[in-house]
Image (cartoon, rainbow, N blue to C red; front, side):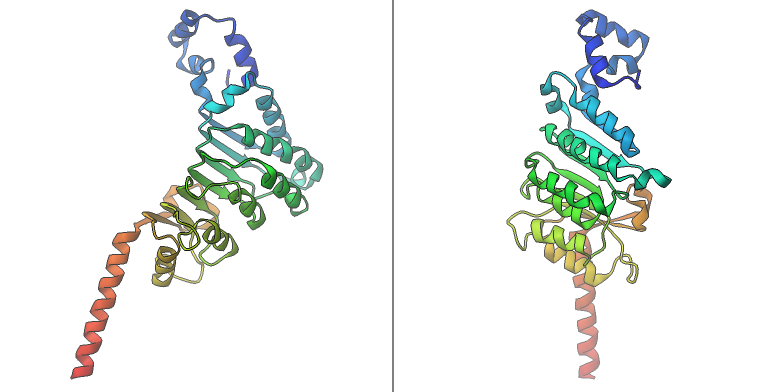
Length: 269
């Protein structure tokens, strides 16, 4: 059943009365979910470029269009395999379908996007498509693994006053982080992120004091900070160290005060 395109399920559902749909629960809860609107609230797309293009075509053919408003969570994971990843024509078709599909999801609140294998030759076209699409005025959470160019294009469509949580594959001080700061930090906007996950810097401790203080300065309203133990494990929570920014700041201030007292004591003696 899960292999059927959504428009096929919708077509079958039009021939089922309310009692028939409810009776599907007796057969299988999974079957029931295939014919009710709730199965649209969370969608996961993962595969090679050709497969994703087919899936997005099926999604865009879904009727009525109002059903797109039901989608709250979406994940798009691009796989790359051998020579297939080098066929630019596949990405040329996938780009417009991807952007059009996302732009139709007017109720989207959480979006996970992994385009690590997107070829550089097609980046400019994809970025132009993203920049021209509508603003995502309900998007609260963004998890992204992509080039800095694609990241910038995606962020340009988000609203600072709505976006609360960001998970990105980028270290403190890199271009991806700087772009996030430029658009969403309280330094340049009256709004601030509440949750942020970034990659750890390779040449500094996982909880480096200058980095923590820098992040706190850039995002004054930040409540929770997550630092990845490995940039290659963006989707693996086991590699993430979460800290309370306010609690950590208190510890850092206390440590500085203690060092100051010790320094003064030695100076006086």
